[in-house]
Length: 262
Ligand SMILES: C[S@@+](CC[C@H](N)C(=O)[O-])C[C@H]1O[C@@H](n2cnc3c(N)ncnc32)[C@H](O)[C@@H]1O
Ligand SMILES: *[C@@H]1O[C@H](CO)[C@@H](O)[C@H](O)[C@H]1NC(C)=O
Ligand SMILES: *[C@@H]1O[C@H](CO)[C@@H](O)[C@H](O)[C@H]1NC(C)=O
Ligand SMILES: *[C@@H]1O[C@H](CO)[C@@H](O)[C@H](O)[C@H]1NC(C)=O
Image 1 (tube, helix red, strand yellow):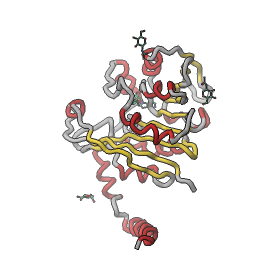
Image 2 (cartoon, rainbow, N blue to C red):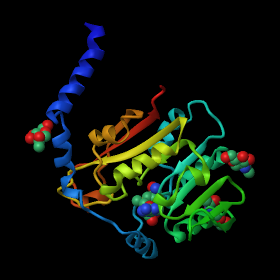
Image 3 (cartoon, helix red, strand yellow):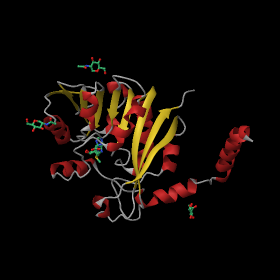
Image 4 (cartoon, rainbow, N blue to C red):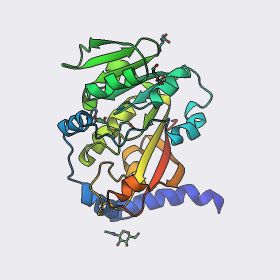
């Protein structure tokens, strides 16, 4: 009965739509505890000013390192996009390998610290298309960091990207903005883009975030229409940091999201 797979899928889809069941009501209830949480841009700025940046890691992210071959897929000189980049050292790691990096970050202090801590000089210029925004360009490496609200950024500013590393980004934006965020990310993907996404699974009744809880079921609704989504890695990730948030369990999921070839 191998070849009945496709019709069955279609049947299930039709039934799900008709009954509005198959997890949809469930997804809403899963998301309910954090649905109205809002972190204002000023709160992120405060965190940087007060050095409350526990999310920052001094080493290259292990999941990026482990899965870089699947992201590159044999390509060299790939253009990487880092949404909500902070001062992730991953950007330098990729640029040192000959890739180019474009990041977006609201906080100027984060951007300046990135270049300074990595001993890189940089230039800074306004971005005419985004009032108030600036772009900081590394002199030694191909790294351009846009200081602006992510939602002011678009493919008309710096084109599309062959790869995206999303760590602390989808999980950091306000839950109510996820559809808008997904639409932006999809618009930034080239046809051969490989989007590596890091999410956290935990009980959202126990901690209000960020990082926010983004269940796999929601990824299908955000990206599944235009992309194939593959779970690459699922690993227990509870440390004292998250125990301090009140969590007793935490799973880190790494997904590879690729535009469907039509
Ligand atoms: C959780 S941190 C993650 C930073 C980085 N990806 C990392 O893994 O270290 C989220 C970052 O996004 C920035 N940010 C939050 N909302 C933003 C927005 N709407 N536009 C641009 N940057 C934003 C914050 O200032 C913060 O540095
Ligand atoms: C969601 O699914 C869980 C188990 O999979 C079930 O216990 C729960 O009742 C469901 N909730 C809703 C609102 O359907
Ligand atoms: C930057 O330079 C300082 C001083 O020479 C050095 O201690 C540090 O390791 C350098 N940092 C990087 C990322 O190369
Ligand atoms: C930076 O990358 C762009 C393509 O994104 C390329 O045209 C340019 O030559 C690169 N510059 C350096 C200094 O590598």
